[in-house]
Amino acid sequence: MYYSSGNYEAFARPRKPEGVDGRTAWFVGAGLASLAGAAFLIRDGQMAGSTITILERLTLPGGALDGIKAPKKGFVIRGGREMEDHMECLWDLFRSVPSIEIEGASVLDEFYWLDKDDPNSSLQRVTEKQGQDAHTDGLFTLSEKAQKEVTKMFLAPRAEMEGKRINEVFSADFLASNFWLYWRTMFAFEEWHSALEMKLYLHRFVHHIGGLPDFTALKFTKYNQYESLVLPLYRWLLDQGVTFRFSTEVTDLDFDINISAGRKQATRIHWLTGGTPGGVTEGSVELGEKDLVFTTIGSLTENSTDGDQHTPAALNEGPAPAWDLWKNIARNDRAFGRPEVFCENIAESKWESATVTTLDARIPAYIEKIAKRDPFSGKVVTGGIVTARDSSWLLSWTVNRQPHFKQQSPDQVVVWVYSLLVDTPGDFVKKSMQDCTGEEITQEWLFHLGVPVADIPDLAANAAQAVPVMMPYVTSFFLPRVAGDRPQVVPEGAVNFAFIGQFAETTRDTIFTTEYSVRTGMEAAYQLLGIERGVPEVFNSTYDVRSLLAAMSRLRDGAELTLPVPGFVQKRIVKKLGSTEIGELLTEFGLTS
Image 1 (tube, rainbow, N blue to C red):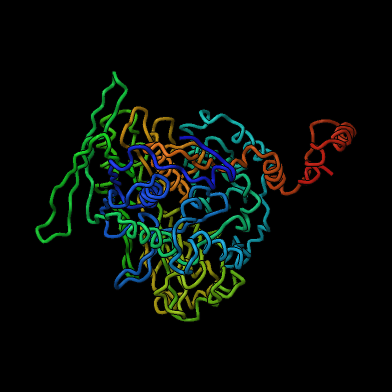
Image 2 (cartoon, one colour):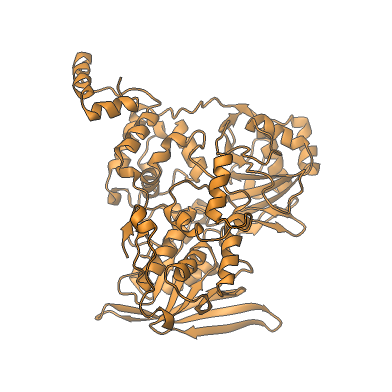
């Protein structure tokens, strides 16, 4: 496998790999990484869909890309997905998946046209004092000291950031800036999270630094992520003959590891099948060298629990099957990763969200006041999260295009609310979010929405229905780590197996994105089948001087560069540079005049 960029590789059709007809493929988990991997085996590896089986513990596909109407509770979205132009593997996949909305179009076509007609932006990113504009005004407010710290992190070798927390690298100056407020709430970073992951994010999205305050960098699907992304892909795979086995929990994999020969082979998959009249039954399949297995390791939504309007979402710290599977696998070989790094600190990886569905026109009027857009227009509403800067929970909320669900009534608005500080008492409800019912979470949100205090209890009880969701492991991949904690997609010496998903290691890309899941699925399929086409490289803006200069200007809030020399010396230097292309670039991006 190799990486590539440009149209030559993008539009090429690889030939059928030798020996593909004698192979079978098994996927553990039916999340996006598995769905994508199966699609690439079929499209680019020309493997028959009938030879592919996907095993899933749940009763529907999609993994973390969910969106359902829970009986007697209401609509539930555990999280949203922010996308951008340069998710190269994601768009490579969905260019081939037929839209279920527009006949003759692909999912990519549908998404592209939607964004052309209704481009994303936020008209109010931050509020305070019960729904008032916080007047962050698109500024990052980074002091000179904080700017130097960002630059130092960006230029540091990767190894220097391994095992460190963000608050070990950045000072209080940085942590008090608008930049950090935008960043942490948009990406769900905490001060105790990995400095390495933050560095990778800076490199990966440096071309979007300017879009952080108003979300012009982002793109969103028409409906929730399940109906817009998972469902079309799932239906296409079914049409190709792929077999899905739901209510099937994979518990272990056997391996034959020959250290002297440097050869590693998966030899058996073990599972438990539930949901039958006879209860749980054991099953397994033997794997030969030509039988491929792609295993999604770890899970950010494992042990998620729903509450309801009158019940808090419980924190489930009990057995976690996805993590137990990875632990069982990791016992076979040091190269298979260290799952305990990510799954044994729930206090630092948990947070909670809630899906609030409004039931009449009263609450949407307050939404419109902040979003400055009609929530019933069918177009962009908030354009991304709105953060209540002075919220004790550090509460953020968003309203995507409505309806967010096809089943949604036209007079309803579905709102997603989340908080980073779930153990802190609220400002209106004097309880932590973790201890709150859906109704109480709605009360806290309405307080920061600017609803008069006297009206909050009635609106929360009678004008909305909320479903809280507690996720113990949702930011577990942000916990500090070092090289080797995550296994390679295809470990050295592996002949018939790969690790995929958010906890497998691939080059330069960033976790907590749909792109990362698709990329690991693509890389696994390409390596194990020997597909003769390049995998799209991670977008290379980190090596583009224009992107770097634009980011530098924005990080300085448009202030020109000053050199540590007398003013007349700086003027001479700028004058000299002015007759060069370097000088022209510095002027173009507002760093000199």
